[in-house]
Image 1 (cartoon, rainbow, N blue to C red):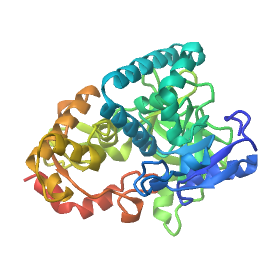
Image 2: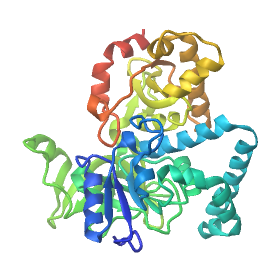
Image 3: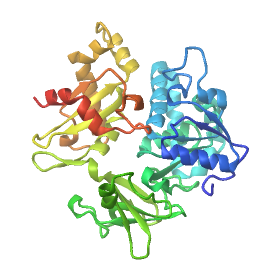
Length: 414
């Protein structure tokens, strides 16, 4: 409530994440405390073009006109992809105007945040970005983002096209959601803000991974969160509790997150890696799975992706869930015949096209050659929390995915 100015009865909050997700539980508690109105929806009915919306009817955001919402990066990525797809389909003058307006507004935001709201900014908002804003109801003023790292490109896209500020936060179920959160007037990207008043954050060197608190220009290490919001441990699992929960000589309870961060000179935290996501190839190169997946998600054909490494080989592979409409549009344009969508995903031409798009995304993100998947498999069915393959925050459940697609992964290494 100290971060979002004037949050109160004049605000409307769109609640669509499951309450099993501690981020959503904490957000709704704040909204109730502040006296905000709330409307309930779901990720599959969020916008007019969502999967579960009957054609010709309105999505949750269009009906509710929220001013505040919590979001996980996967949702904002989908909003960005949907807008860019429509711009690409229109083409011609519309596309040129959109790109020109986007560059102008982006330059204003990155030069001086308030410069974006001048007369020229208002002109572009009216002519170009008003239809884009209507995707989330047209009244969004602030988006609280958490659950996973948000790409700088998506954050800037929301700033420009929706005219909304995005506050990126960091926390875990074990820390009762928030541990750090961006300040309202912080227009930088890729950072999760300073520690919240309710707790402490420190970095602990991880020598094996090459991250130490003596690193220059910024100290780096495993993020450890302490204070009164730290949970007591894992239910009926004393072994795991003792592994990651520690109490110091002053009685402060600390949780070792497994995330790797660095502190900027202004006291703002940035999450740069995750210990569990770093795996080693046969020749000793380290790959950060989360970093590679985040880069490849920018491909125009990718709905979801899991990069996999077998340490007995010198290359990585990937399971890819393609964007249904994007792949079918490509097939239609190129005259490729197929029985059904599953058949299209198995065709060599489709696999090659998606792999080329991953290569372009990897080059744009400046990934090393060994970080680019050498082989991929296309899977026609989306990964949902109901299937047990992703969490409520749409993060990958790697062990479940590896178990379900064990044969597909083995074939990629044959």
